[in-house]
Amino acid sequence: MILALNLFIATYILLLVFSRYRPYIALASAALYVLLGILPLGEAAASVNWNVIMMIAGTMGVTFFFIESKMPALLADIIIDRISNVKWAIITLSLFAGIISAFIDNVATVLMVAPVAVTISKKLRISPVPSIIAIAIASNLQGAATLVGDTTSILLGNHMGLDFLDFFVYRGRPGLFWIVEISAVAASLVLLAVFRKEKNKISLDEKAQVSDYFPSFMLLGVIVLLILASFIPDKPPLTNGLICMALFIISLIREAAAKKDMGVLKEAVKSIDFYTLGLLAGLFIVIEGITKAGVVDAIAGLFIKISGGSRFAIYSLIVWASVLLSAFIDNIPYVATMLPVVAGIASRLSLDPALLYFGLISGATLGGNLTPIGASANIAGLGILRKEGCEVSVGTFMKISVPFTLAAVISGYLLVWFVWR
Image 1 (cartoon, one colour):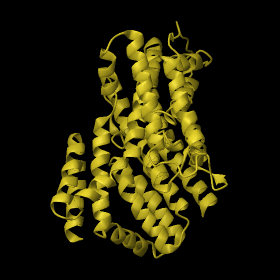
Image 2 (cartoon, one colour):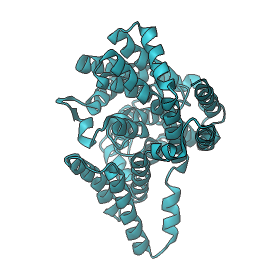
Image 3 (cartoon, one colour):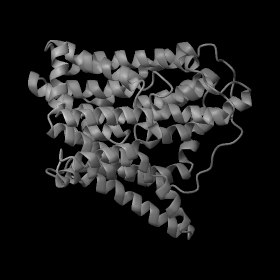
Image 4 (spheres, one colour):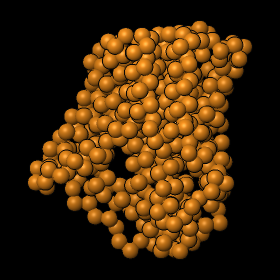
């Protein structure tokens, strides 16, 4: 166990220090777990969750064609066309980004919606910084609302055996979707206060044009088929992943045939985030290794000792520790590591695991909004601003992100406890 623990700590330190090389670090660490005999080769290969890998890859591919069709840009334009001033434009765009990110990767959402905010800012000759920050943190917030909205949601769904509809109603009670949405409403009220003085009038010269609606039907197909799959009893473990990959392949073939250009294949494959997929594959093996070695049980025991075995204390510890840690580290490796820990804690204390699972996801997802580096969506938003010549300080970012995050976290924290205690 000592060997496995030391290797795990070294892996995490390297993941934090060398963020560009995270997939290689995770995969190298996974190889060491096998070479050092901590985990047999056969068990290592089996520990990679291919359903999760295929769901992420397939959804990313379908999303690529959806973005290329300009449907998101058209939807944003329609919304802005009905808004009177900058304050409501920022609030509406952030809510729109949140809704989109419940079904599409957070970074992709920012890349879709942020250009609209930049265009409005240029027309009015105002800074795009506040609106881009609002869009980024709102997209990160609502990514956990559905099974396909975020990598952490996919990890949670697979670990708990959740289907698409379980995020809305789970065991007869409100699911994670409603917890996230109520948190989003609370956070949006904070944004109203932050942007109360932004009253410039806005208008759009022209709307985006959509010539191909097939990608929109494919994205809708992913959602509908995942819902239908929820009703299949004892379905094969790869069902959701195969659905997402099948619709991606159909989209790929159809696009190549329509354009008569095989170059689209290269662009579509490039749209898949192999960085995240490689990171996850390595982490699955690493986590299986520390589980087999007893490290996960030891961490669970430490959490129980710190909390004194109190249900409320352990819940609060998981939520707020997740908020603080996710403000500085990527929430994907954190959630992947903590899911089995939370399972161990719930088992030892005879707690309803849903309370701790939902607390973990709420804290880890929302905590990433505290700092510019806490979430990939934030990094993407700041990258867009940098291209526009706007360097954003940590202080400027946190003037918006801190009140937004606190409102969302406190709302989710109280609601999860009230529903699942």
